[in-house]
Length: 359
Image (cartoon, rainbow, N blue to C red; front, top):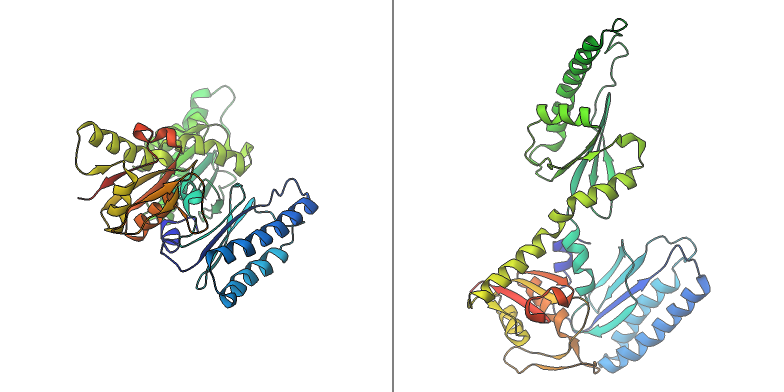
C-alpha cells in the first residue's frame, strides 16, 4: 500500500470519499478507551455522511462497511500501530500502517492521502549484507520491514583453515586471507545470482578486516561507501535495520531534497516553471502540468476549488469543504506527477505549497 502506484489508485475524485485514520496504540492496550473511541468515530461518521448529502442507501452501505470492520477489530491482539480506511461507494480499502498517526475522519470528494505521503516517500528498499568470518546473511529491508533472503551458500568446510604452527603469525594472517578469498568467491557468485540487475543500495555490516576484504573483491556500484563496523551477528536484525537506516537517511530524503532545491533555484531565477500560489498550482495540477509538488503536511487549508472557478479558502471546514492541500496532492498524483508532504517551515517562502511545472 505504501508504493506510489497503490496510493495513486486512491487519487481520483469520487462522489463520496471517507478517510479514517485510527491509531490503535498496541503497547497501551487500553481496550475500554479504544472501544469508546471507535463508538465515537462511528457516531461522527453518521453525522458527516448526512452533512455530505449522501442518500440513505449509499450512506448505509458506507457506514455499514466501516461499522462491521471497526466492531470486528480484536483490540486485544491487533498489533498494527494504525489502521487507515478508505471507503466510498466504489472503494473499500483497509491498510495497516507501520507508524501511528493522529486519529482523523474526513468525508469529501478526495481521499485524505496527505498523511501517508511521507511514508511513501521514505519507503525505499535496500539490502543489508551482514558478514563475519565464515558466515554471510542478506536482508531485504525498507524503513518498515526486514526479511532475510537465502543466499544458498554451502556451509564452510571444517578444515577450511588448518591451524598454523605456534608463533607463526604471518602464516595465520596469510591463511585467513586465503580463506576469506575462497569464501568471497562463493559469496560474490551467490550475490550476483540473487541480485541480478537489482540496483537497490547495499549496506555492508562487518568487522573492519572482513569488510575490507569484501570491498577489495566486490565490484558492486550500489554498495554504500559507509559501513556498519561491527560484528553483525551479535545484533538482532531489528537493531541492524535501525543502524542501517541512519546510513540510508540521505538516500531516503533525496527525492524531497531534490525538489526543494529545484523550487529554490527556480524562484531565485524568477523562472516561469515554478509556482507557490495555491490557486495557480491547483489549476496546473488539473491540466497535468505539475511535475513535483510540496505541500504542508502539518496543516490544512479548507475550501473549494473547481477548474475554471475562483479558489475559496478559509481556516475551518464547512460541510462541503476539502483540504485543498490534500486535493492538489491527489490531482497531481492522478495526472502523473509526484507529491510530497513536508513541514510548512521547509517550503520556500513559508508557502503552504510549491510546485515545479512541466511547462
